[in-house]
Length: 156
Image 1 (cartoon, rainbow, N blue to C red):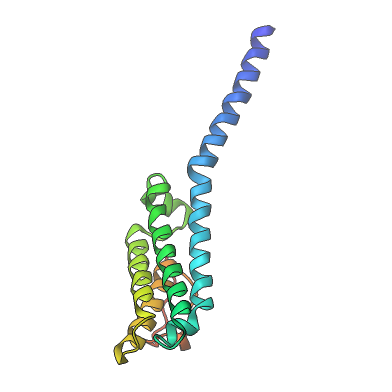
Image 2 (tube, one colour; image 1 turned 90 degrees about the vertical axis):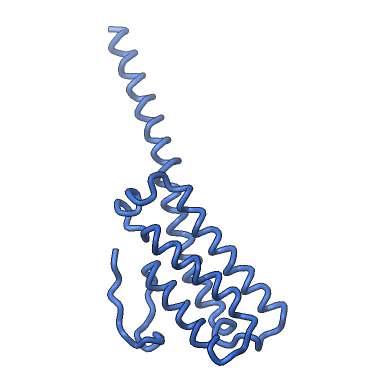
């Protein structure tokens, strides 16, 4: 009788420990990755006026925008290391692939650099970077806001 109680308690403790490990090592990093993608989507809207009009806002506004975009790029890349077995976990939880994360991160860095310069080509480059970020991270971008004007179907 006591052995049965012991096995029941031990199986409950083991279940709790395994559940906590799964939660801390897999589920929470996946949720943080999704949260970062949401923060990137938010930043693209919040800083759209700076991204679309490089070199025009005040130096402080351009610096804050560039700094924020660069931090988001770093956060996004860090998830490649925080999420265990990233490629397999990404498929299981419908996260962007490693290649898409790196592409979006590169475009975020491009945007952070592009808010300072007001050249003819930078407007198109910034729009292209925004489009690449949205396509890479499956963030909705209306067709009329696309530089290519070609609708892209989101892929998983």
